[in-house]
Length: 250
Image (cartoon, rainbow, N blue to C red; front, side, top):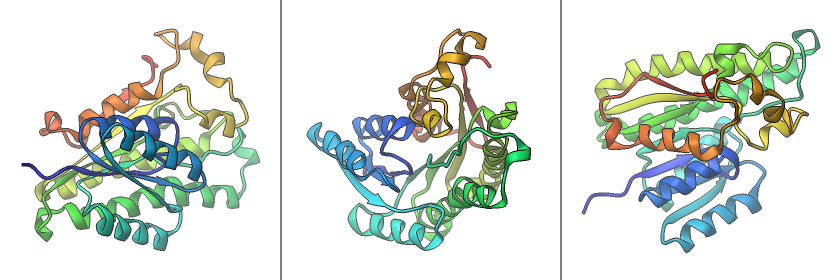
């Protein structure tokens, strides 16, 4: 019997992270759902997975904090085993603003979570997956955004810039670890119906913008989850350093 795939989904208590955790568990992954604030929601996802016969745990950690990331991976080692998959999904978003309205504090907090946190999670995953360190290989999927291509002017240029950094990191890390049995790819969702838009101050943002999309509608979290699950799967065994855009043709 093959060993189970052990996958960490950061920000896995809601939205794209939740949809991904549920789908991966359905496909046999042992899943760790990381959360920062949504304990009730995270535990509900775990309960759903267990009721369906899957294996899941939930661990609180703020990925803007390096020590909490280290502790997160240590707890996964102890409770499930070393990770073979990582979905770097957790991210911060602040109220819509122009560049003139941005502050250093906002930028520092945003980049600590969206960029540094994802890189440090990848660092810990690589240490465990790398065949150069007696690991069994693995796959990392970074959740970027269509904003990295579009820039999000007048709304989220800082968020877009953080996702641009994730795109560059995805490419660089994929080349660095390709010979160590690790694949690194990214998805770039856009205009997806998640709670994140309410964080930005406009819960109905997708409804406002969907008429501008070639497909004429917003996307659902599960549509992104399918792409993430494929990139983690053996069906994508020859795919690394690649990006899947999920933004309705935008």
